[in-house]
Length: 444
Image (cartoon, rainbow, N blue to C red; front, side, top):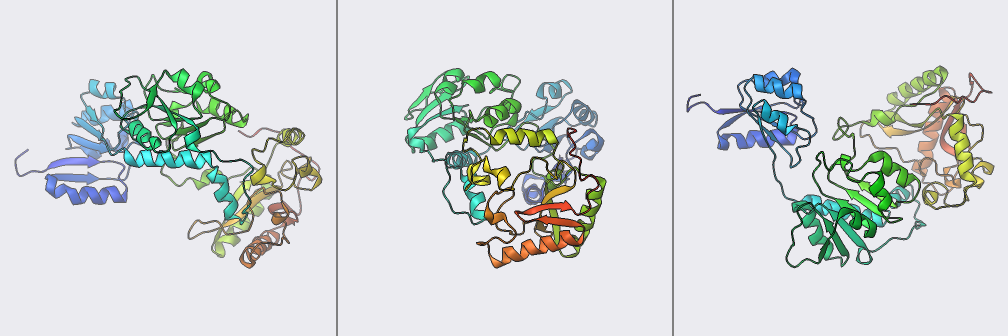
């Protein structure tokens, strides 16, 4: 390379904002960027031909095949635009002649976000936002907590963990910390303890440790069982720090009070993408799907899309729900789904049926969204709200919401469905192919 030639750097997985910054900075750095929004892989490694250095995002795992392909064309340096590097096998990269470096960044934004998640979880803010979205301004049945009365356990006391602890001091809470290399921070009242002890005594645990072979499933089934009843977890580190299956079990049983997860195990391919298609699918009879396709086309003609919430439901799932309705009230979902009735009243009042149209494959729960913006059309009352507010002729909804309900009803009835008086989102085929059969095959 002569002195007049600029260093060529290939940048993979660039969003528009990143690409603009790279192009703006390149002249001052005397480099020539080659920019693509495609994630790096063996198939497009040739884009880096002539580049000794490439830059990658943290959302794409670099396979051994990809690293070998990059090494063959002369890449000797990979910079990941993240502080974490668990998506790259650094030791293997070194064996094929490639050096890997990460990028440190300010811990403040992550620390601020962590505190926000803590406060939202303590106050059950998600449920409050959902209620106000449907004009339900009643207080939650769960009382909020104050940080000053709690013990917060911080796992990982690097730059981000330290920034979190500095913020927590202002709330006056007790702070416990755990790190493989504990460092005393002058002026901070932090108790450094082993992880198991931290879990036993903390009301809220927040994770800020890197993901390595040693920290994968750091909070596994055994350690989650050590935590206090009603304890909360915040994770802004890496999803695989927690055994997700074990966590779900603890949450569903009600033993843990909640989890605020900025990251989740297996998020690859989903993070930073529009995956509404993952939730906009249901199982149903061929007749149901055919009628739904007609309804989708008619909705599109009017500038709307259909958001599908529920379709086929195995009979054993309905039976399980029936057993649940006979158990003592625990309050976990009452404020959101049945605020003014007891769970045992759901069947008697017509909100749930022991022999459901869902199990016959002929019923769907759905709503409209604005095709241009993706925003849900206001209907007044959320999905599965078992309350008079959900009735088609409900009082207390706005004229706009009433018109939107009528718009959905007219659309669905034109396409062969009949409405259900108690639930504005619930439609069943008028001409069911299996009116007397409740199917019970599993859905995987």
